[in-house]
Length: 114
Length: 113
Image 1 (cartoon, each protein chain N blue to C red):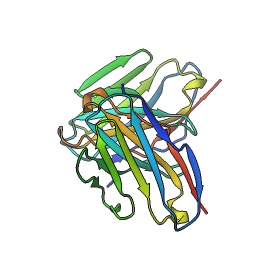
Image 2 (image 1 turned 180 degrees about the vertical axis):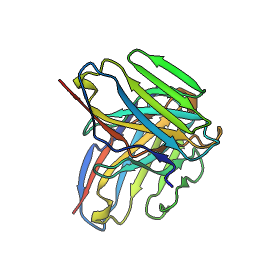
Image 3 (image 1 turned 30 degrees about the horizontal axis):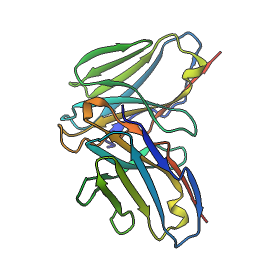
Image 4 (image 1 turned 120 degrees about the vertical axis):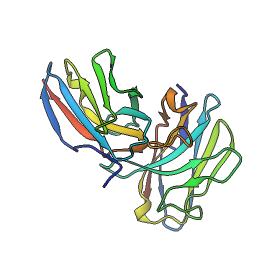
């Protein structure tokens, strides 16, 4: 399975600012995804990061708030824009070579907005 | 109706017992099913995947899938305190395209010594 390096591991940010989270995979992967996990909750899919094209967002998530880049098959970024305290959460990236190979997660970014 | 449903628990079992974790899903076209384990403060870790009806065994873990009933379960034999974690059921609701996973809310398992 792919190994994912995600950074930063945590950050405390002022409201109104933006934070960019990076994920680097140790091998080329077909699929990359971004999830959010609220404290004590399960994972909610934000978007599918598409290589070389615009991300595919799930209902309730928009590009202006969560712009995503995926310039190649090993790297993706998620930006949380114009942050508010409601954005405080853990953000996780996930990757897989194929559905049948299983999905690996990065170590997560714990974001606190004050 | 949620796409993937699990009892949140906690499910408490004594050490050495069998823990049974259940999950139902709403999309009949779902093809791939996964169980993840998540320790507190850590990211999810894949422990089992299953794609065909029936049982799949890997060590102390057995995944069971019944597509007709839209039901997938995870059995943990000889449960150990180190198995105490939240177990997340995940389903790929589409046949082979984006590959996205939809997660249930997770079941917290407590294994008591």
